[in-house]
Length: 336
Image (cartoon, rainbow, N blue to C red; front, top):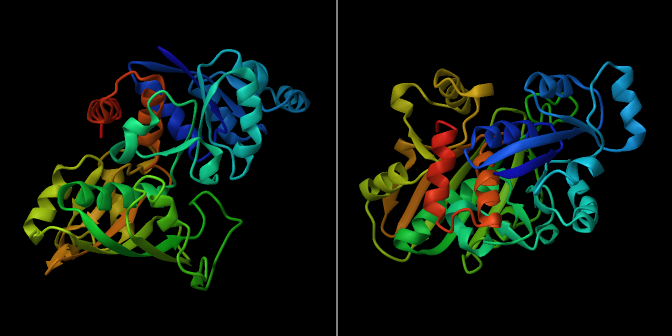
């Protein structure tokens, strides 16, 4: 049983903790918060041992009536791996501490690729991460691109991919960020960082990405054009996506005409927090013309990387060397 600590119990951390708790071969030994927030109270309610990030903040929690099990330093003495879900750039600062404690660590996509010794996507490069000590799970957008374009790459080969990313502003729970009444190129340069990030999983893929931010909180949306090496029909691509784990097809003809309906669909499925861990591809958008494939997909930025973190733990500890086996175990435990 792998003992897992979660440093940062926010948008990603709380979801990773819940996913770990469902797995038959791992357990949550504690979660770390910097402040006594409502999320810290939820951690206690979920029976996760709560740790402060440092000794200075312990008294702050105690003053608010929280039972604290210690500090991050104490948690590292109790876990086999720490999943760092702290805000971007903090993970890189934390790595020397993890190394000094001899604890394996997983970092999130908000960190630069060099923060881990290798980047990770379960369907893309699981074997590359076997036995590694410090690994970065790629971002929500990169995860989505790796799942769908990666599936095409394995089956038909990709000559080149061109993607436009329409990104949400903040997460739904964040009222401090925009834009409010603007469409913002982010970055204004091309490529955006997403294409090079895909190359940390598929080094030889010719992929170019551009990105804009729009005033929504629900999901990201990608328009994708892939030039394939080998011929495929529209029907064959639809079947490929249907048979690929963590991809679902949705239909505008059934009333799912926007990201709002996709999120409502996730709630109707009974998913905790209304999460959709899968990448949603519109069935009607899939079209093959010659050797070019066109489709549109939506990414639930709060949750698609969560199962990737679970598979990453299995790869790092070589609980199974088979990616498909780990993916099936994770998805079964998470009821995906």
